[in-house]
Image (cartoon, rainbow, N blue to C red; front, side):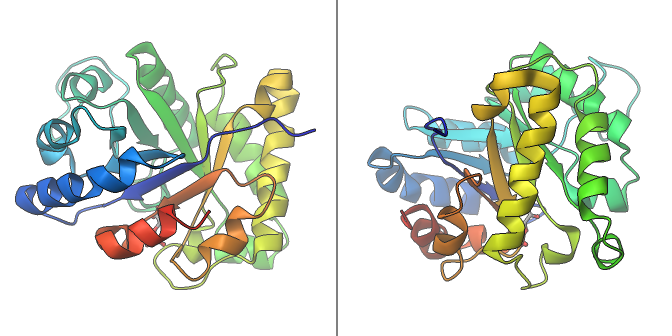
Length: 249
Ligand code: PGA
């Protein structure tokens, strides 16, 4: 019998929206959030974290950082620490989003250090991973997920609050979504891999799907037993689309 897991719907705004747009979106989303059975997270650009957290205050909307550094402080120009993100009002942070891994050379080892720093500072990490198109075409998907999940969780103790996002790289921002069957296979496999490390705790971990999620494909994805919500990029920039996604179930 699978454990009851509260679904998470998360908006990854990437490098979009100015401060005023972020504030208006969150203010307008509050009513939807109040009647929502799911957990909701917004990941705004780091410069608007505090403003977004203020706009979300008193509502069930969580604010998360899109990226953090693993060090507490230091000469790391342009970076923010987990403690700084928490101080700005964050409760979550993304670790190892594919754009960070592939455009900025973030290794699984760095991702593990970030996740560790997040937990140490009271943030819940959302660890993102997924195969590239070439890896998929070579039949390496499960091997990539196995290696990446193990390396990205290295040294991290079992924690049922931790969130994993399966985001096939070829589906991010492309309009191509994994079929529900493929997404379910990948998410169930990730749960098994986490179970080998963390035992029963894996049944409580929320595993999200991400990659071209939209109001038309969300329902079939959410009907999969091992998919516990979605990490949404492009469609999350529009309140109407994101609201439809949240209300799919
Ligand atoms: P997308 O982005 O929904 O635009 O594909 C998802 C993500 O990058 O998390």
